[in-house]
Image (tube, rainbow, N blue to C red):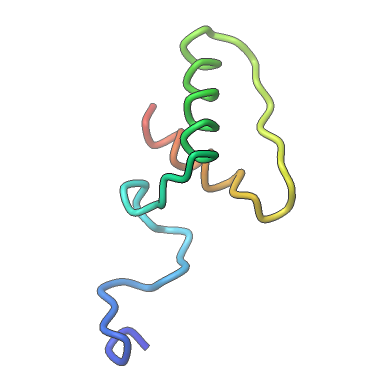
Length: 65
């Protein structure tokens, strides 16, 4: 599949580097809120609908720590 479509890496993998993620406005807001929680040394909860990107945002955030 990689050769057929000319991909350089496996698509839809959980191993995508955070720099390859699309930064939607919601994604940016979630990251900003998590950064605020961390910088303020608070406790936060990341919630959302199934498939909304909670794990993806958490991975992107943890890569910045």
